[in-house]
Image (cartoon, rainbow over all chains, first blue to last red):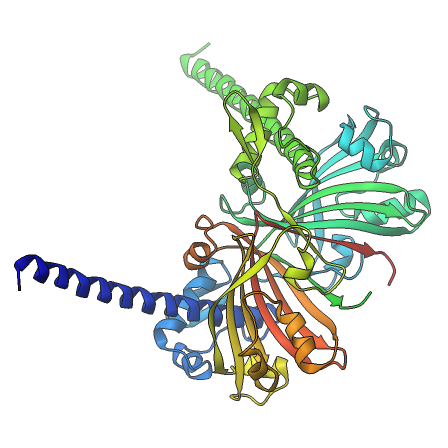
Length: 262
Length: 262
């Protein structure tokens, strides 16, 4: 056999080994993700009541996975800030995600009532000239003033969301003296107008937080943020509240029920 | 004045200048975010039909913002991969986000029919022993086999989502010979069982993609992912499909309508 063939042959074997090695790594990564998703569900559903996950060997047996797969799955959950490994204790749940309903239009304090106290740090508040897209959606003349509010919202002191809010000024002026620190805007809108809210169009996205938003939310740079855009109407159909809300991805889940037929 | 006082005084002025500088920077960052959110809405609503944003000076006039704020806002949208600056052309829209309805239970191909063709790369498919939490939710005996499917879903060739699916084996076996590459699982479930789907419990989260998921989705490491967990039932209430879906955050939005009273 000429030496060049031997070399090629050798390279071929090397390639096979590399391919097999890659396939094994890919398989383990896939299995780790699969296991992490199941554990994530249990975490979020408070399925570990004492706050500690079972030992790796127990998890491996329960989920018919290898110890390596279990370790990788726990690494994924740790990277998301959901669990931590404590020496001598094991893997403990460190982050709680709070459920926000997708079935009914509710303010944050209403939604999270059982979970703690919502407080709002008003960062900016005052009349501002409405840019065309805001004016159009709030049904006010372009360039007329609207009330602009920027709030950092906390649950028991932990930053949850950064909310940018636009409200028509006839309703907004009454908000200027209200207790925005401790009250949902939804509740205040109903009190001011004397009407219940009706419906809201919402859009949800996952985005990486820009540096400044991350800093305000006390989250790592680039942290995943659940972005909610919401245009809320009174029960007579009038649009009264346009909001852009950045929820910390590690602190909020949105849950609801979908039906096949309407 | 003793020199130590002069020094203190001088330091105090420095601190004031730094504080004022910080306040200005914070204000501009806040205004940039505010503007970016408005432009994002227009982008997603195809409000720039020719795919080009107005010139910076026009945006500055329209939104009563400074050129610096406009530039920072465009930088935020560029960091998210929504726009790019082309020399001699201006700022162009480069990413389209596809709307996924939150109002009705639909498969991906059904939902995105107007936007393009959905194809599915089946990465893994076969019977697997159901871990306890899967068995419980699918109402099958723990440890019994379920069909496990892992699919990378694309719209016109672009990766959209990575889906992990568990289906009870009595229904799942009929799926083994089906055209999963080109057909939604929802449609196949209805064909196999001869019943319509009824409802689904869903949970949405924003998470940073782990390295491996990001690679599969061809997204940057740490990219924001919209994570959907969904348990779908037939119209008789039987749970038939448990899914964990990672949507690329830069390609999907979820939209719906919420009502104040149920």
